[in-house]
Length: 424
Image 1 (tube, rainbow, N blue to C red):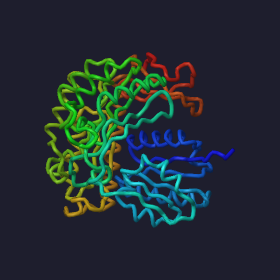
Image 2 (cartoon, rainbow, N blue to C red):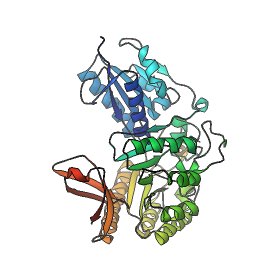
Image 3 (cartoon, rainbow, N blue to C red):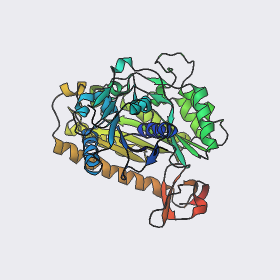
């Protein structure tokens, strides 16, 4: 009997990538592959890449070099956003055997049947305009929480962003299929689903990007709220202009959708928002935050923000800092602006020096730390529902409250994957 081929995966980037990697893993296991840890030895290594920042590109190249040192005879497959954007660049990296673009990543099994080490590097990619269709994906690494992909691609044209070039036009699953996946996850023992996508609030355009479904994200939220067995949902990230009052009000009254929103801002300066071609101004953002906190004073709000965007003066940055300082939010995800090929932001001047970008990043990360400390202290002494994860680390285990406060407690196997009332 032939020995089973082994495969190992590494994921760079967002929750959407994690959900897709998990699906690729299950597909190859169904094809007879045995999954191995990435740090060990495998016949095939698959790297699912990101290309939001230059660091993600560099990390991909470093991973390939690491594989070459430990397993030079193994096949190396690169897929994901970096693979779609720069397939020839990746193919030139010594050791890479196969580059799969956006349209081909879920055909990985067929490609591996035809691939042998020593062949010239194969590129299977197409123009992003030709990418259509939707492949549902979800992560299933443990039973506690899963990332469920319901939407892909983006029709927005923010000047800093390569995602529309890497993932194509906005398209999504049907509500019926998403609900079916939610039932499958409930049967697998999953307690919490995190809804993921590139532009979640744009859900409903169908698998080919046309508005063929008379459905929207609010309809999806209402349908998922009815699924038996899933006790918690989180909305991973949603644009402020697509986060409607109806959605906010529904979450406020739902027992399943957690009081937790992650809402990208990117800048607190209307001038910079205009240069970024964002589809809102800071005033709209303030309105969304105020409504959320009026209906759910205990709600956690996370914010994406970019520092060092071209044209950002010290006054613009301080406008962002003061805006965020005054908002009733819980934490920040701070990104240092990184030049990306073929984006309009490259034409915007003046360029902010790297050292200034890094200083501004530190300033906002310090603000985020203080915001999270304050948010946590506000709930000190309260009893909230916590979903504990089963991983043990140093005799401790972690869990999140409904409103996304992370707790670390002594390990107790009885608490794993159980929602427990816990005093903060």
